[in-house]
Image 1 (cartoon, one colour):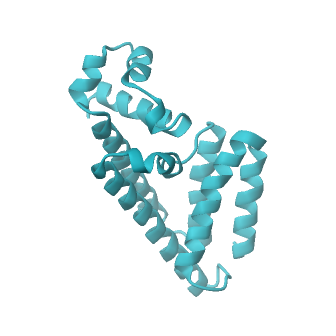
Image 2: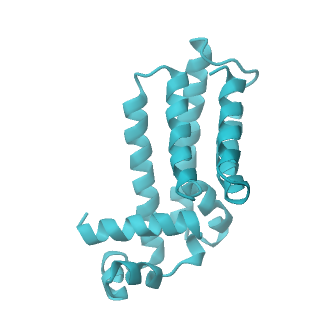
Length: 184
């Protein structure tokens, strides 16, 4: 991507995480970047195309991170995953999926499909991490690993929302309890 295009995607990502997809316009991007709306439309003719690129970038980052973590013990992998959420908490963000979910019904079919792919990729990775961690006796939990993965993901997402209202300690308390409850 070009430098301008990268900046557009990065700022759109931040705006989605802070305001929500439907709550920002190209003007919210053009003014801070000091470019004309036409420059944004040149790279992303529609807001949906911009949203797709933001989600695809997030999916690439997830794939890169999980590939880097692959050789680590599962409890450390999960801790690294929580660290990504901690970083967003410290920046005042919510996770991308958590931000796009309330707007889901208003998204284009292509964006809905991409958000589903992102959710499936996160759930698949988390399920595998938990299954392998239990197999290697790093995690202890009852029931299906996929069900537990849903609980972990939803708790991490909601911890970012609660942190906006209650402060960053809410995230710290929730993530610490999640890891302790798994035996990590």
